[in-house]
Length: 273
Image (cartoon, rainbow, N blue to C red; front, side, top):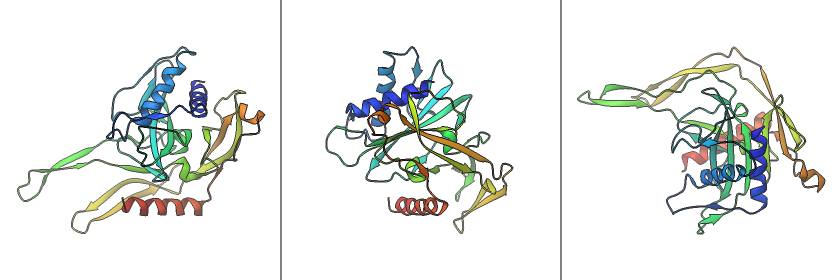
C-alpha cells in the first residue's frame, strides 16, 4: 500500500515544516512538483521502491516502478484560484495506460517574495473521485484549410477544467487528507474522517461543435449507460492524530447546490484572470 506510505510521508514533511523551494522567479509551475519528488526520494531511505519522473508536461508527473501507480501533481496558490484547475493534457481519471492515478493537490501562499514557503494544506485523492470514466481516450486532432488562402491549420487542443477536492468537499481546508474508494485496502495507520458518494449523471458528453461565425459551442449529449451508478469514497487522516485529539474537521461532500455555486464562482474567477 505505497499510496499510504506516500501520504504519510507528505503529512510528516508538512508537520516538520519542510518548505517548498522555488529555484527562480519563473519557477511557478514545478516548485510543488519538486517538493513532492523530494518526498518520494526521502521515502526511499526506508522503503524499497523506485519511481520515474518522465519529464515536464507528461502524464502523470510521477510513475512508480514496482507498483502500478502514478501521481499527478497540482499546486494551487492560496488565496487564489483553488476551486477548479486546468488540465491541458489528459482528462482527470483514476486509471490510465494500465496504472492507477492519484492526484496530489497542495495549496501554498500566493505572491510571496521568499524562495521558500510552506504547504498550507494537502489532499491526495484517487482519480476516480474526480472522474470515474476509464474509457475516454484523449487525442488532439487538426485540419488545414482555414483562412483566405486555405493554408492555416486549426488544432483542436482540448483543455479540461475540473473541480478540485477543495471545491467539492467540506472539511479539507487547513488539513492533510487522503481520499480513496471505499473498497480500497487500508491499515491501522489511517482513520476515517468522512464517507461520501458521487453519483453519475443522466447524460454524457460525447462530442461538441463550434460555429466559427457565431462563436457558439454546442455539446453533443447521449444517455449515460452508467446513469445513477454510485461511487463511494472514504476520507482518511493519520491515526496518530487521533491519539492527540488532532484529527481536525470531518469531511463531507458539498450539496449539489453548493457544488454548482462553487463551479459558477470558479468560472467567473477564470474569466477575470
